[in-house]
Structure formats: C-alpha cells, structure tokens
Image 1 (cartoon, one colour):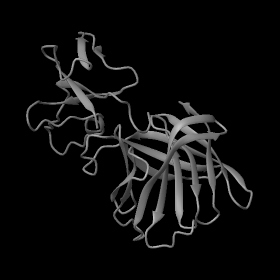
Image 2 (cartoon, one colour; image 1 turned 60 degrees about the horizontal axis):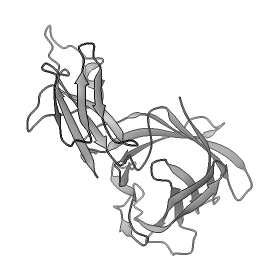
Image 3 (cartoon, one colour; image 1 turned 90 degrees about the horizontal axis):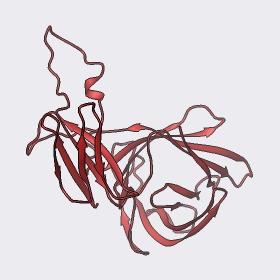
Image 4 (tube, helix red, strand yellow; image 1 turned 180 degrees about the vertical axis):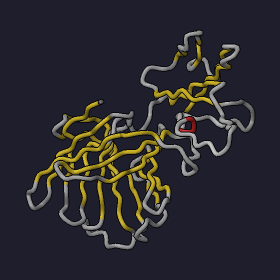
Length: 261
C-alpha cells in the first residue's frame, strides 16, 4: 500500500509534509484546510486529540455523539490535530458514502431482477489495523425488502471482507495472473481459495471496462467441476463489474449503472 501523510497542528497552523506530493498548504481561521495531492488519489482528513508515538487518529465523529454522562463531570477527547492521509494510487475499490452500484441479475430459470449495492458509511474497529479504507455496504434485491450488510476494507492493492464469524478474509488482490491464496475457514467451515485467472476487458450493460481482474473463488474441499465456485470481474478504482455465482441458480450479475446520492 503506497500511502503518504501530511499533518497539521491546529493551534499553530504549521504544516508538516511527509512527501512533497501530499502537503498541507493552508489552514485558515475560518476552518478551511487546503492540501495538494496527485490527481486520482483518495484522501481522508483525520483528527487526534494529541500527537506522539501512541496518537490515535480517527476518521469519524462517532465518539463525540450521544455521549452518556454517568456523573456530573465528563471528559472527552476532541480534535486538536489534523492530518491528511492519501492513497496516491487511488483505492482498489471506489466506495464513497452514498455511492450505489446497480446490477442486472439473471438466473438459469430466466428470472431477471435488479440488485443494488450501496455504501452507507465508514467503519472503524480492531478488525481493521492495516490503515485501510473500510466501508459498510448494503446489498439488496429490488423489489425484495431487507438486505445484507457487507464490510469491505480497501487499500490501493488489496480488498478485505468481514465474514459472519468476524474473520477478516482477503477477498481480492492486485497481482500477476496465476497468483493464488487460501483464506481461513468461513462461518460455514468452508475453506475458499482465490486465483487471478486473467486481466481482460469486460462488456456489460454499463459499457466496456478494460483491464478488469478476473478472480476465481472456489471451495478447496469440493470437486473442481465448475459447480462450486464464484467468479468476479473487478475494475480497479471502481467496483465489481460482473459476478457469476455457480452455486444454486447460477446467477449472473452485470453492472447496469451507478450513482452518487
């Protein structure tokens, strides 16, 4: 993960640059922070109450909301220092809050439905200690009610996912064709391996996407007969372009469009 940092001390408005390409250039008294970074990069403004070897940098305000007071005096850590963290190559997955990807899903029984995957927020916690950008995604079939909550964490090279048993599994990774890795057992005890099959263009209703990475995910304890695997075509810097589920109804999910709300 190629990531750089720039830090600013609020009370003195002094900028310290980790690298020249990512640098805080101004912090005004009316609360505007300005920085430079490469085009196409992904940045976060983070805060801490103190700096030093044990500084805790946060990207959210959750700890400052709905504070339950158990006595007449309460203490909270508040923003005193700010920094800009930047993935100069962009993120493997593009999941800004409010982004919704819309898919056409076709099954072998010829039933056609629509699936929406929306980023509804960012998440923090002990499961993610790699400094990655972790997003909470809801996946739901339209017009079905309800949906499934998914947690993705992305750096510029790797995507992780949280399983139902709270195991963090490496979902996808940039690498050469033929690269294979095996994940820990999932909540059902299945052990899944992932192989990079190809880097190729993919045409779906949303258009043609070049340099998609084809990931083949299969159960190592099942026969390699094409009936116990999932295949994903992922466009780095975007999201899933195509997905083929070779279990059950053998569904094919193809990107129709996406929107930001």
